[in-house]
Amino acid sequence: MSKQDLRGAALITGASSGIGATYADRLARAGHDLVLVARDAARLEALAAKLKAATGVKIDIVAADLTDRTDLAKVEARLADDASIDILINNAGAALAGSFAEQDVERVENMIQLNVVSVTRLAHAAAKAFAARDRGAIVNISSVVGLAPELQSVVYGATKAYVTYFTQALRQQLSPGVQLQAVLPGATRTEIWDRSGGGGADKLDPNMLMEVDDLVDAALAGFRQGELVTIPSLPDPVDFAAYDAARAKLLPNLSRNRPAERYRAGAPA
Ligand code: NAP
Image (cartoon, rainbow, N blue to C red):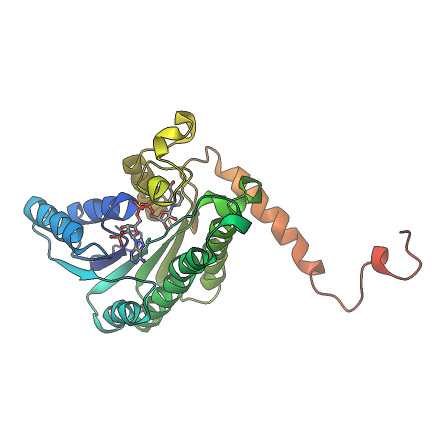
């Protein structure tokens, strides 16, 4: 996969379809053994059989619902105990169509469990294990939606803003031997568009829709270049650097011992 020539196994969540299944294909072809995680064991078995036949790598499957604490703990334990795993692709995720007030709040909570809680707990298990060996990589699949409240994907977008922030902040703490990457796909042709209840990807403007092979190949190119944040569709990385620089300019004034002039008594209303 390589920035630091990682040769170990990769654990991929959400490997039964879409972006996760494509990572599985690319990493198997690059010679990595795999641990594939998702709920649908039959799909994982079929993918594992195909990739084993094509590449000869070793592939285990773990059928797990990552919103279920017992199942999640099983995957955390695998990351903690299996020293052959060098790479976590923290990819499983779900979206939910419709306006916030109209969404089923149980499904909203389930999405937060999957997109935020499971991503955090799996990254925690991996960070601890990888930091102890001072090697490894954690790739968190976020979304451009987390940069754009205008898109009105209220909770899904917030979960993805979390994933990007989480990755950037973790970079400040984790030893440089452990590589981190947040991948921010734009609209990508996968099942998520059907599963979310918003209609399939075919309803989208084709000029805004990336094929999943292109998305994963670009994400892997960003990984090899050592990027912390990869936005596969962004033509000029200077634009994201400028965005980040504007945010960093706020830093010296975000916490001070007195309110800004405009909030003091006597300030114009
Ligand atoms: P997808 O084809 O629907 O894949 C989602 C994967 O997550 C499936 O393998 C699914 O497998 C698994 N999954 C769902 N719920 C799960 C649960 N409770 N426990 C364990 N696994 C679960 O969609 P995708 O587009 O590839 O999504 C992958 C990631 O990309 C997500 O984090 C998504 O937010 C992100 N993303 C996608 C797009 C896009 O336009 N496609 C854009 C930005 C970001 P099972 O059903 O077998 O469990």
